[in-house]
Length: 192
Image (cartoon, rainbow, N blue to C red; front, side, top):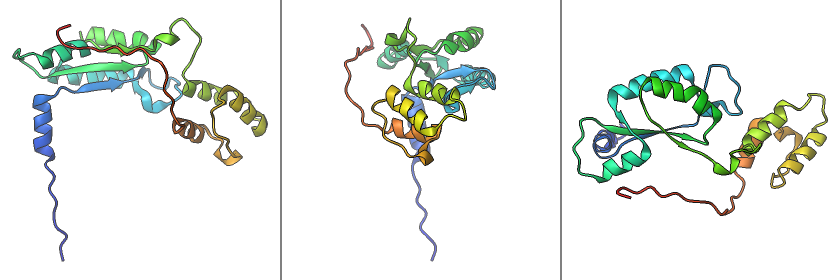
């Protein structure tokens, strides 16, 4: 007996989305090939980023998030499809590597900056954890390293020696219960 074929309406949904919604391409880091980062999954190489900018500029009109919201709410007719580029966390490499490429392609991007980090030596916990591992001598006792870890990350769950890898620790720390913090919320709305 042949299993029934299920057809999902992906094509009509994608067609509708491409006509009614504008994509927002979210990026984090742009670094030259081989440059070190605590999480390679958030890195786009400068070479790939430049190729992406060439691709995107042929298919879309790239605008800021604020302009995208304004245009989506308006009844203005458009000659081309809209999209926006965003960068999270405002890394230095966004300025050093991404901005020159954006400028060369005459494109804009919106950068979300963690304002409480500006002018400080603070780092994201994932980056601190990475550098803690990276700079720990190999012959150091695991119990001593775990002791240091618990001093710097008091909310960190307790680990066994088998769990003691960067990826396992990072995964466990990402799964920790969150708590509500006071934060500033910026609302962008069309026509303001």
